[in-house]
Amino acid sequence: MASALDTFRRAPFGVSDALRHAQGQALAAFGLGPSERDYRIVASGRFWRLRDYGGSVTRPTLLIVAAPIKKPYIWDLSPSASAIRHCLRQGLHVRLLEWLPASATTGNNGLAEYVEAIAECVAASSRRHATVRPFLAGHSLGGTLAAISGTLAPGSIQGLMLLGAPLSFQPASSPFRDALVSLVPSGFSDSILYPGSLLSHVSALASPDTFVWARLADAALSLGDAQTLELHARVEHWALDEAALPGRLVHQLIEWLYRENRLCRGELMIGDRAADPRNMSAPTLVVVTATDDIAPKASVEPFVEAMPAKDVRVIEYAGDVGVCLQHLGILIGQKAHARIWPKITAWIEAHA
Image 1: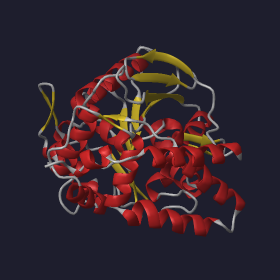
Image 2: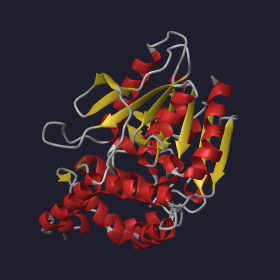
Image 3: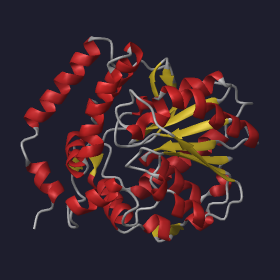
């Protein structure tokens, strides 16, 4: 029997995609598109590029793993809502691993290929200065990928930063996890490309409270302040900027992680190696958002508790207005930049 994902994929998404594209273009016409800082490409692979935003090679290097679901400029949304610019102002050397949209050219890559790309970027960043290993950071599924990479080679990094990253996928670990597993049965194809719009629709169907009603409520709460409303509109543009994903990655994320919880159980095999939280010995900083239904504290605690590292810190963030989805607040929220990011960069300095 065809799965929900396969059924949705065969549906006529042309009208929906055209509408979403038109909405994005309208927002961009009002100056609400991406406003990224300059960077240069210092390394690349078949389906990834390594951005370098500058900074001294004698300062700590922060290597960001972008989430593969959307475009990476959520890390640098605008001059006033940019985690990257905050880190640069603190003197860090910042790099970002960008995933290219899936296509026939980039290949049908899975978790093994994504983790291999992270390892290549870690090695390339370490070569920048012979005695300095990078700090590895990721948000959302970028953080999940960073955590998998960290468990496989903890000695290759100076520290690990996980921001709103789901790590444990046991039943009841998050409302989104339970809804997604219930909506998408096993058996969907891993050999096709899944358009970003399809994944957005599936997420909205799985958790309308998170992806529909919470967004509308945030828009209403933003109306009283021009800066907050502008931020919300910029995030809406980003959310419409879709990127296709390879079927193998989508299949493995849903089956191996969300359904079977292999990572937290120490049973996720990447080649002949097990990605096991009990191998994670590097200093680790975790940020969880109290109002996040995608990666709440319950989806992080079992992984953290299994880690042998003595140097583990968990910071709780209350959330923000104007961020569209609370899951994104840690990267762009005004309170996050005022109260949480100074703690993050101070943690990096203390462990450099």
